[in-house]
Amino acid sequence: MPLEAALKGIDRTFEKWNTRKHRIKMVNSLAYCAQEVLSAARESDPEATAPAPAPVFAPDELAEYFRRNAAQLRTAAGSAAPAQAPIYLEAAESLEQLAGPEQRDLEALEQRLTVLEERIRAAATQACTEEELLEARREMERQLAPYRRKMTADQLVLLEKQYLDRRVMDAAGLPRLSLFYL
Image 1 (cartoon, one colour):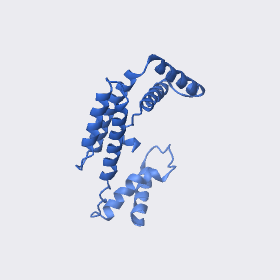
Image 2 (spheres, rainbow, N blue to C red):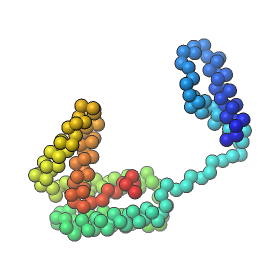
Image 3 (tube, one colour):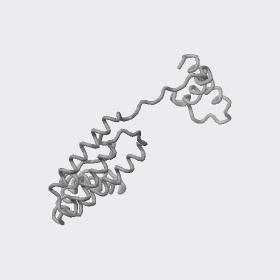
Image 4 (cartoon, rainbow, N blue to C red):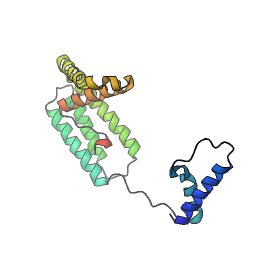
């Protein structure tokens, strides 16, 4: 962005601010000028186009991530109870299909991965004994005790759910499927 466009945008912002009847709030940051600076930059170079964004994930990187998680699910299925093994194998098959070369809508992909992860987590939770779940909850309570007063009820509920889910997944040897873990 040329310096002239930035200066022009800043000048416009302060001109507008000076024409206001009520100038109670002061301008404390250049971020206040951002919209006018961008407008001035577009005006000064109307043919400039933003470069095409680079893909967030390389196709090979995604394919490897899906294959690695599918292998981990197949391993977990080998030692899982008969009720859970088919669910793990089905999720592994889905991940293998996702490892194909086609272009992906990352939002739709993340939704699909979330559904798969919820299914395998539910199966893993079902396989846990009452004693295992109780011990996980006790451990969570010990670890959260120092932070309880500093957190809202909503934050605590979310953190407790995440902790227990992670504990169940780890105990079953299951991978996290979300793209956030890539």
